[in-house]
Length: 225
Ligand code: SF4
Image (cartoon, rainbow, N blue to C red; front, side):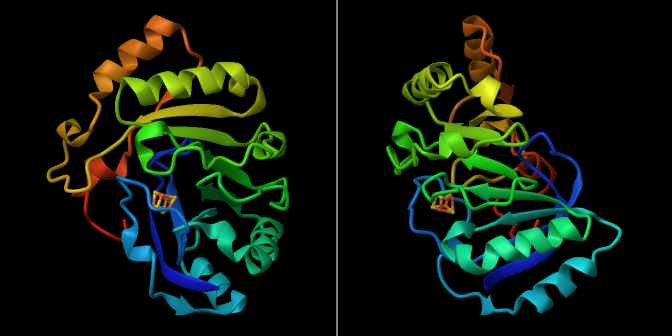
């Protein structure tokens, strides 16, 4: 697989947030989201055989949580799917972050998929692969990155229409962060987290407020954390 980086950090934006985690970041993405913080994954990287990637993950023992991320990992589906199964068989808890644009039916059931649904102002609106709703399991998490009221209303209606809280372990509403963010503060959010919280409570939504924890621990533009 083409790999940008492998490193240990804390998981930042799911119900596993705060847990030590080994990240395997795959190179390449077919989308171009407005506030993407992973543009450095679009090109470059290094071809690594599965055995070498597995050995790199094992170096971070005793961490047993692994996140497959990118870029868009499912662009390398042919090699990635057996690799995720290998991690599961070795006793790892495996998370996979995906844009939601690629079909996900082939992902092993034991993998916790963290699936984006891109909002209107993301720069990648209408890219969600609708059949992925049927691929969701009670392990999975669905995430909306929200920059304003219009994005929020889209996320709210999509959540209600598809009854997401009954399909997935968690539905995450997360404020978008500016790309040029500086300093470890909520002022870098394009939408004030308090405003988003108030909307969620006013509408009685059974969703989780998501904050990108790593952006409060390290400088927001730091890579490999
Ligand atoms: S899908 Fe993810 S990696 Fe790809 S452009 Fe959007 S935010 Fe960046």
